[in-house]
Image (cartoon, rainbow, N blue to C red; front, side, top):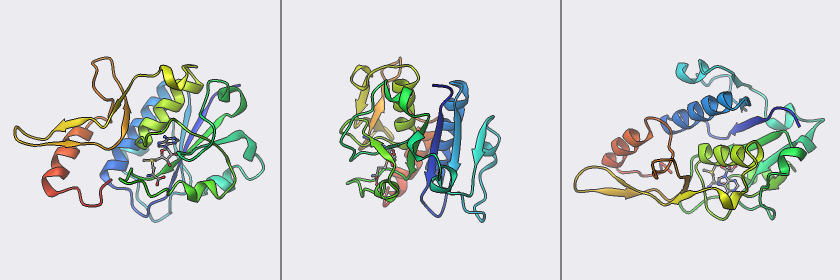
Length: 205
Ligand code: SAM
């Protein structure tokens, strides 16, 4: 099957700094991998950050994924933490569009992916642990484009990040392990986490 499209359906009213860093990373990595990235359901009132709009290949659409693929639903695979089947390399031959919830992670997870599940797309799970949206797209790309099975990918679960010399914070998510052994995160995310954790995370993830 030809090139892949990764769609993140934006489900929040706003687009905060965490989402911005995640979406910029997804846009850059998709472009480098020869895939398309579309942010769907973007309200016309939402001003997208210039850094995101300027990533080559980035597409924003006001329409929801349902409208975009109304006649072509079978091409779309929803990445769904509650799906019964795990994503496998063969799914790259069945689907060419992979759909993700544009939701920040939360602990415990609130299952907002259900908003997309209700629309009737076929679902696949990426293992039992909650991932950030950029991690979920990265893992999907490794499976369907690089054909690496889910259980052959190296992960870091719940990494402990050092905020300053006295404090650290545990991220309640699964990440892909980079070559340096550290979890792969969007550029600038560590600084944002440090800044926000000084204020108290509150509702952030
Ligand atoms: N707690 C969230 C919820 O309310 O569903 C999970 C949001 S997660 C940060 C953002 C998106 O990444 C999800 O909507 C889903 O598309 C994808 N995702 C994250 N972890 C996943 C997993 N283990 N399996 C499948 N998809 C996953």
